[in-house]
Image (cartoon, rainbow, N blue to C red; front, top):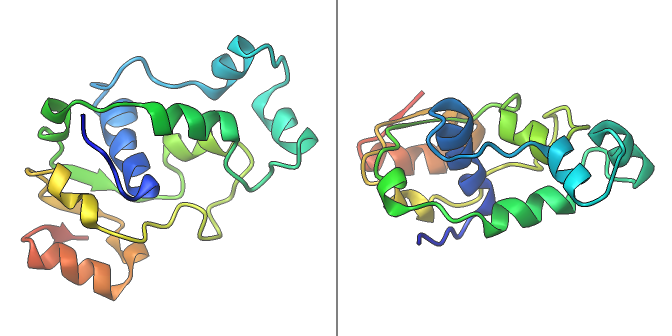
Length: 142
């Protein structure tokens, strides 16, 4: 199984495979996950009650860190979308507005895991250096 160096990059890949392409199943649902842990609060209530507003819930982080993504699925990724409204972020941080660096990608070392990546939408969030790294690999940075 592939090992990601940048957790936030992994989340973008999960967004594509789980919530857009629906190939990485079952989709993670934070509310259902919390209930399975015996937490009956709505995810928003839980975040506020536990001083987790505008943070990643540890329960979601643990799930996604442990999630293994088969290489054959990674090889199918041709496009990624970086957007503060991504479903994966809502599942990680039910109280988050996308206005900080919580989910910023710091490294593109994990590009080697996506041999067929052709395009990254929302790449302006990466900054000029990382956008340049995309373009150097022939990946369209929109």
